[in-house]
Amino acid sequence: MAAMTATVSTAMLRAVPLFASFPEDQLRMLTGMVSRRSVTRGTTVMAAGDQIDSLYIVISGRLKVMMSDADGKEVILSILGPGEFFGEMGLIDDAPRSASVVAIEPCELLAIAKRDFKTCLADHFDMTMAVMRGLVRRLREADRKIGSLALLDVYGRVARLLLDMAETVNGQKMVTKRLPKQDIAKMIGASREMVSRVMKDLQVSGYIEMRGSSIVLRDSILLPE
Image 1 (cartoon, rainbow, N blue to C red):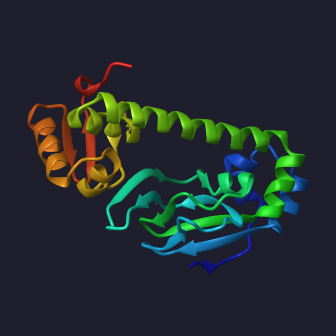
Image 2: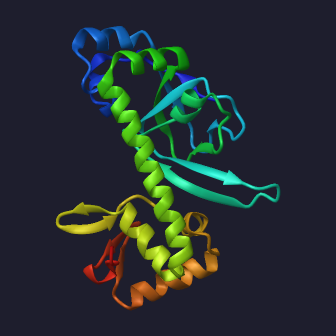
């Protein structure tokens, strides 16, 4: 699945939000618990139905969390990037993985085994709170996605997704990471053809501007809260 790479330094761990509050001596101890792994594009890090044995933290690269049916139809639940983590739910409730996690570009990951993860939760309140905040954030995102599917048309769902994935660059909201139309379709429950039509309409109407692989969002695309 993944190749083992160099040992993990305390500096690398301190840069991870999950471990940022750990004192130096505990970070040194943690270096013996955490492994570093490289995965290539297309690698399935976790498959739906797997028993979870580790928490994974993204150091670089991006991964998609996805589900598929017997016919191969795929739905993308979320995109994970640096600083985010996955696998914690299965470690907490001991249930099999409900979705697959696949690298969409080369990634560097940190992995911490189930026993060590539970020890850290028991010993470090700040880490426990960070995991809880991550779970709450995902629950809120799921609630909003359900609401979007029920209440917004395809134009609204595309706009909402672009706003959610945008970052501010030089005062402008931009989606800087490559976002294929096929992936947009899988994330909002629409066909690729419909997404292409909506993106073209948004561009012609001046709501978005394409700059290479980046998408600039105009203020007029903002949706009411």
